[in-house]
Length: 523
Image 1 (spheres, rainbow, N blue to C red):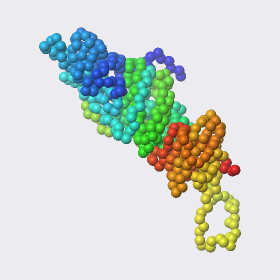
Image 2 (image 1 turned 135 degrees about the vertical axis):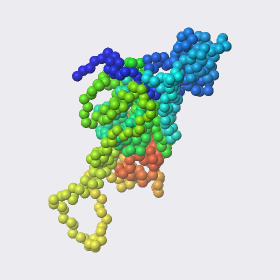
Image 3 (image 1 turned 180 degrees about the vertical axis):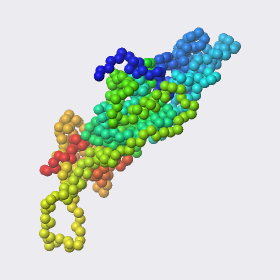
Image 4 (image 1 turned 60 degrees about the horizontal axis):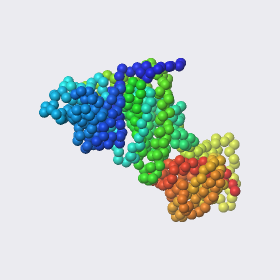
């Protein structure tokens, strides 16, 4: 079925803009003493920051003779009209008429409820209840501020697309689209909660590392998303496999009936190593900028179906839409009690799959260590036990268990073996035209310093410290041995402070391809 519509209003037949808090600017967009005209909710708004830094947002029209207040100037805590210099306070009341002793009693302009927090300037929209019985603007419930301690500084971006806020927020519960669009291989809904204008969804995901340039890696991810109305989406992402936490804030704000602005912010939870934190923060932000807009072409061309044909695995879309409908009506006098709408615990087999999918290295480790033992036990014709030799231990003394045979790639007895075989394991095809120097500095009883210079498909290795390495790995020899043997996740080691990584994270991730463990160690 092909659906063609000329306007967004026809594709999304909602009665009005939904009630809630909406971002209209980043805090950095408005300096003290600055006035800006903004266009949202199909109208002009005038925002200004007072000389003491307080933000106010007013309707555009001066009630005197209709001048556009966007051309005004800041005077202390007030905004002066550019036409006759009437002065309006941040609450909309006229504070001064410079040529009159008495201010007209109805001299006021509508002031929007404003909230500035966590680097954003928000206004509250409510088409159903703009004022109380006395004609004063209603005071909406403020948003709880987000914790900023321990998080990196805001990274920000703003997009404009032809869509509606309800479509953007619906993606948080649309589980089935995560595979085709966002490289997710498995999704399980852990819980859905609704409480008044708030909705929270927790998902357990298994996702590839495609978004960060590691398509062969698999990660277990917890996605904890909270919606406050349709204009505030806070997505907390916990990459369990690597011990990394990021936070994306997505704010779709109606410009008019045809377009929305999407304000987005990103943060990463700080790790023990500040330099590694900066690298990971940039890596996640770049991935977000590439991955999130994959939905834009679909949003700009899809239609809202009031009775969609849903299937098992689509996610709690029905619960979401029922909750969203309340945002177009007058809110209840009291907040609804918290309600757990749905809990869908993962079946046992799904939990096993997620554990196995945490890391390809962990999976290979399990196969190396367990499969040969199981096969040997099931063998119908087990090999006869060898005859005891003269120096064999007595029958009642158990000999140390033999290590299981290696069936998938080499295992390194020491880091010296790893470095001795580095050049033989080098894959020139994976290197291509790469030019880089990889430096290892391992401490322990014996300090090891090695580097490898990769240049257009060739490699040179040496002991010592290179003058200008591209990537440097610093950790203990014992931890590095565990890491190269698949017993320690590298990203987890660096995020928890067991190692230090200097240089581009993406290039460090490529080391597994440059020096694969599977290549032969034979001389």
